Length: 199
Image (cartoon, rainbow, N blue to C red; front, side, top):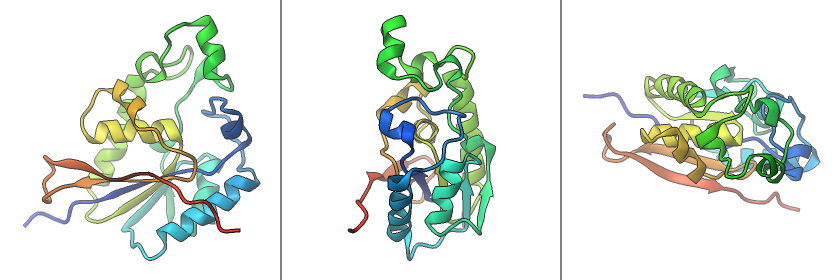
């Protein structure tokens, strides 16, 4: 009998100053702001009671601190494949400003000058998915928005450009899995789930 197939829980990090200003935050290692820390703790509450065979986090502090505040810091393993997209010359920029100089630009189709192409990010997503699919049981990963969206697209074997369809908010949870215990039937079990912290 085949081993139990994994469910992959994808947790996006909490808010940072650039999340709130909507600047592209790739390799700039920003800390969580106060709201981000509160939302990271709330994310931990939503994950309480679930059992994970393995937990991974991006090495960037906005993800690793979210992991810690959610209660998984002691058991998490760093995985460089979970690092956010390298935006190259577009690091720190707003999409609206990029479009002034490059009308029609789309991240998941065009990539970034002096940064990563969609194919390079998809290759990292594929390596992470291969690791997850070798684990018999549920896996939790803390990371950033655009790499999470690429992982979702590649879970279904879609072209990298399809990642644009899987929007996820800060401190949200998405769950990918399989139907009928068949690797040929990947599904979304939950996506972009967020609850505000209690006052």
